[in-house]
Amino acid sequence: MIGIFDSGIGGLTVVRAFMEQMPGYDIVYFGDTARTPYGNKSPETVVKYALENTDFLLSKGAKIIVMACNTASSVATEKMAERFDVPIFEVITPAVELAIKTSGKSGIGVIGTMATINSGIYEKKIKQANPDARVYSFPCPLLVPLVEEGWLNKPETRMIVKKYLHPLKVRQINTLILGCTHYPILKKIIQQKIGKRVNIIDSSIAVVGKVKAFLENHVEVDSMLYKKGECRFFVSDVTEQFKKTAKDILKRTVILEHVRI
Image (cartoon, rainbow, N blue to C red; front, side, top):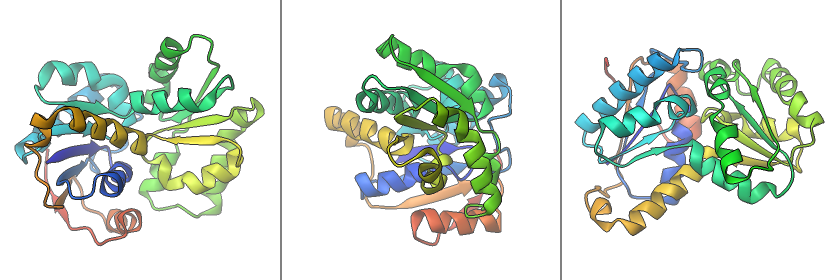
């Protein structure tokens, strides 16, 4: 199984990308809805959650782990590699690589949770790959709660997105990294507010490409993965809104299994 975890519902955009790009692979998903959002937690707390989430997914048969959470990816990747002897993928590096290919000499914008932006991880990785790159990063702390509440088409959401994106728009970026897997759920609104000429980098799509390439070059790992097309969805708190939004994202009814981590 491919194990995927996130702080809540946003990681289902990664599940959707796997279903589209790697159909048939078994997936086990954990959404930590009882402890969401991660973006306003301390790095120590997020690391603790990431380790616990991974232990759970491995207990369910996962052979590789995808951190479908930018906040966890920004602070927990090193500890994860030290603790677990399985392939682990984070969503930041693939998004950075795709953004650099796309942006050319123009500016790159990054939006994410407070924890992700404060970590400086995107700017660090972009500058390592291209020291001349212009990077503008801004936190958007209200977007995750809005998505988790299902406020996807509310006027208030559109107004908040517009306000968050204004500093990036005036800097005339041509590439925008969605530094949170919740944000692709608002991709249509984000594209409208930032402008149609700006290339939007969806980390959920980028990370699946990375996993696919890895498995093509590591047949021994690929052979351990079940390919029956089965998906299991676990959450630490079951809500009706999660069920509704999950159905909207995956275009199918999702059976949620409640667990305590």
